[in-house]
Image (tube, rainbow, N blue to C red):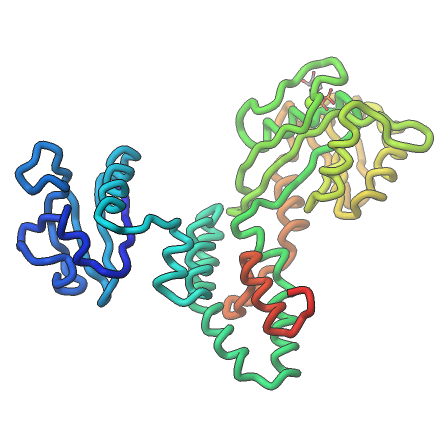
Length: 343
Ligand SMILES: Nc1nc2c(ncn2[C@@H]2O[C@H](COP(=O)(O)OP(=O)(O)OP(=O)(O)O)[C@@H](O)[C@H]2O)c(=O)[nH]1
Ligand SMILES: [Mg+2]
């Protein structure tokens, strides 16, 4: 099924919509379903499409038709020739509702997972009400309240855009094997020679219901002073911008990669250090405190690693009744309301 929102002069539809009750589209009883046929050539034409129409407000209605791309584009083309203007769902919402609700709805439609959809649904009630309340608060109190809401922006933006977790480390430590294990399919090529991954590969999944994008990078070699490797520039940029960097080490050669970890931490301090290939260690391997040990190949320690990733990315959640910004537009609105110069 596809739903086409309609706003404005609804009787324009009479040229193509032929309801069984023979009533004009503009005069249909609100919130009653009207079944009918769709064709610019009349109800007896060979090209009719079955549609369901529902008027939901004085000048607003919904048209439900078959969800295939061909049916939708045909109806949109017919609407255009009836004199309607086709707009994006975001623009439509802004035209028929208030802009705050429109943006909250648009954000909800972009929810990345069921868990984030639930949170965005709660925000659909909380955020617009908070914005109207803010306008009536004295400046000090308003500033404080906005500050609290904005402090959740990093969390809020990830309700639609996944958290980015970069996998990096020396060549051949098992980064691609780990990415494949975490996303559950063979996204990256694994090979027993160093230098297999040349570019940045991405794959998306959800951990504990949160959307996460993993980025597998080319192996970085350590030198005395600087990181130096093929694809280094790209890897560096991704490390810098990441929400979390997983620095992978090979537990069978633990003396290596310490300097590399230090270099990476200079680019981004949000790191989690992981020791791979523990299945190959002849004796029990003890990683430094706070580090995680795994075998990506044998599926050992991966649940603990997933828990550690989630704990780093989402250490806290906002109180259930707190309105928070979940889109760049909402963030900018709050900055504007607080009198911030850049907004
Ligand atoms: N024994 C063992 N081997 C592993 C483990 N994880 C990966 N390997 C092997 O290590 C080799 C390199 O794995 P990759 O995943 O390609 O390593 P990489 O870090 O992506 O390598 P580059 O892309 O070259 O930087 C492959 O032969 C893997 O099968 C593990 O947990 N245990
Ligand atoms: Mg690789």
